[in-house]
Image (cartoon, rainbow, N blue to C red):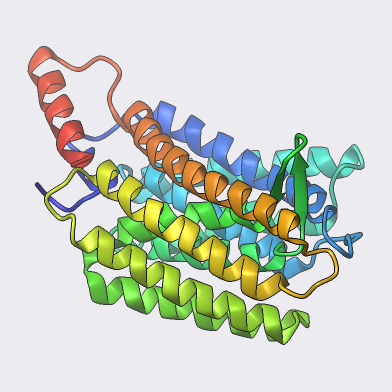
Length: 324
């Protein structure tokens, strides 16, 4: 079976511009709302910030380059530019509403601006479609995970969620998408993310211990995931995602949690157990949700609503192959 995720296989016919433009606008609006959620989540850290740094806001915008690029992949030329212009307007309108109601800051405009502009710039890189948006999301999520590594969100009486886990779960799916470009490309991306984490940590004054542990956990866990994924070439894409994530999620969580927090006053055995169990479940679950959500979004947005019977059979066959 072909080693390709759904993005490529679903482009059997040009999609309707209206639905795609609407999805782009909604995604850009979420990019504008993202900093509000990020500030709230960062508030569960050891030193809750009053404002988000501009770099964190820009990185959050880069995360939305992935879905925007997926949605715009069936459009070309003026149609794509027009659709992205509508998305930019939706993002700006959402941002302005937040500012006027006092729920947002002027700097929050960076998020939808980076999302739309990044999508427009990467759309011109056609020789390896889908690669650079996936790398952008992967690197941005690893950096945001590092930024929120000391924020812990209580969930019920037992579970304690490291906020960075929400971002790191997304990296699993993005890495698995890059696999179709070869093992070497995956390792280059992993190294880029690891180095970027060191640079960001130094820029933001992150303790050296956290920077070193983050680098180690990324390299070890991502290497294990890559090798498992590559050895399942004959399986369906979603099966490969689920299996490789089942190895990398606990490995990354155990390495990072034990090495980063061992010896801290708050890091009791019961506390670390709560964090490890919660993070493994969330990383694995968010990775699967991201993979399934990507497939569902692309099928709904990029598949024409009323195809002919022959065309419908063709689309269904391509969709089945796309998740192989």
